[in-house]
Length: 192
Ligand SMILES: [Fe+2]
Ligand SMILES: [Fe+2]
Image (cartoon, rainbow, N blue to C red; front, side, top):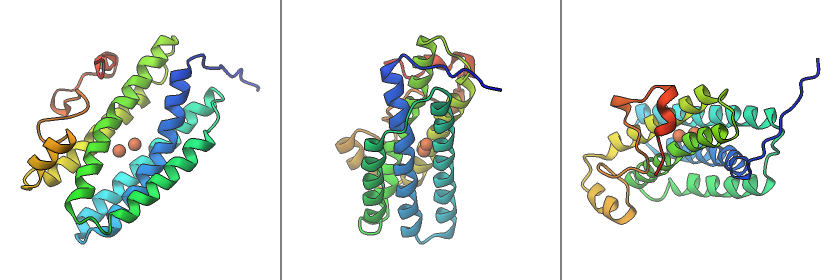
């Protein structure tokens, strides 16, 4: 049976989907380098799990894109491929702290991408992706908290926090895992 495909008339949403799809690949590549560069087997395993999470996100975003016939952006695919590989390689030369720090900082920014996507869908009258977008946004928050937990007692953190605007007391999102909104209320996240 032929299903009618709906088109999205929301340029910001289309762009955000295309960017998120490609950026998930960059993240997954980066975590390959990160996992490869740490010595501790437990850390390797945890970072590998996060890499798998990002490949999952990429699949989920693609499923949504296909649903609305949103094409993959060749430009973003190439751009984020290069970025991901560069970050991956750099993990082997910049020491232990920085890959953890910048991963956490990046994840912190990614959280709101999925909640903003949800808001954009709502602007188009679509609520059917709420669950999956919520799940992905919360997962990015878990990633942020994991990376922060690894470095929060390191003495370099206050210095980096001051310099790069993320750390124990500064985040790029307003999600609190200990007091989460339920899915229905989560459109309140990331409003500022
Ligand atoms: Fe992700
Ligand atoms: Fe993530």
